[in-house]
Length: 267
Length: 199
Image 1 (cartoon, rainbow over the protein chains, first blue to last red):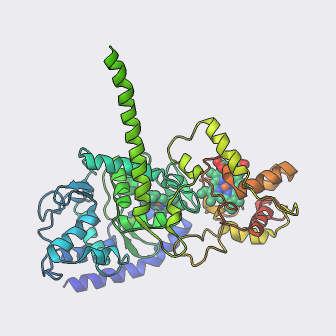
Image 2: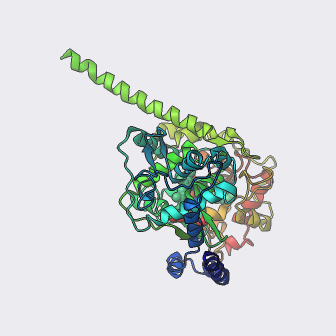
Image 3: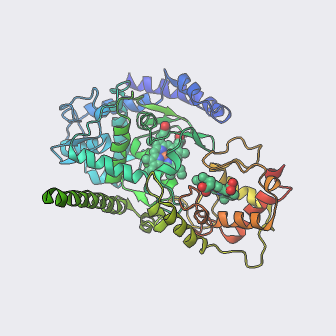
């Protein structure tokens, strides 16, 4: 049954995608096709796969993720993403959704984190993790971002994230701020949110993970940040490393109070 | 009375050293959270003087800016034969359009684009031009090709930080993003009366 739904949905995407691409190059108005996609976000395929992965016994320990604590109680998915990243007492670390899921996969299922950290986006266990992300964030869609910055480790991560945001380095002297610190700026035809404002931070944070129409791929926030670092011409950030968590705390914390649109749809 | 006097500077010291701690932690994290990949080495994570001074929402004081700019000015290589604009504007157009180069997915550090259109409007017919930098439409036509103008533009392309230490524009020559020959082509794209930039 599920299979047929997937097949039908894939068919629909394949039919409409070229259209959307043509539109994207002609029409810079992004809202128009976000609207168009509103009742058929292809990310739903990933969400369905993620839900199944959550409930399926897997890994060396042959366990499901239904006991995974994303911060609001074991097995609770509703509203969990809107409160991440957060400090977790059991690991003594600040974790985002992706590093927390990775932790659950390791502790509950026995899937080694190294496999994910050393893997590739959209492949293997890191690919499965992305589907789980799609499932979890869907249950925070429309909720207000509510990240608790009161724990000293969260505060420190926020401060470090802010510093990283302005940290210029690499072959082209860019920092995140080079591309994301002014209102209404564009690179080529692509609009860039001003992440130094709460509204802009929420726009960025609260719309990823997202389905990217231009390449028909589902990207998580870790993937998004990885590609921004690539454009920044730095060395390659390690998956779920401190720098990615710090930036996530900074963006989520700054975007507190704004509604998340999860998963997003992007050009 | 004396006690309060003593405490105040101590408190100040503490907050200054806390800030320095945080900076050190961040610099460390910028190394440990990354790995080398292809041409993108871990050295890229270490800041030079200009990058370090320009890594906060507020730029350094005027004296520091001036000092940095003078040091950057001294790095500019002026064309040995005095040929600033004798390149081929058609080649320059390709360099201005291409935004590729120097990422960890690029196989070599050579044949990079300048990525000018990422940030600047140049040929008025090109609609998908970025807006991070000012419009350069009609550059040569509007500014003429006097020696100071041509020299300034060469210098700006070679090392943008010589004129504004915290410029968002990359240092094309200094950073080995573009070669001298490529910069000459881009100069032609900006100044040649036949270039679409000036039509």
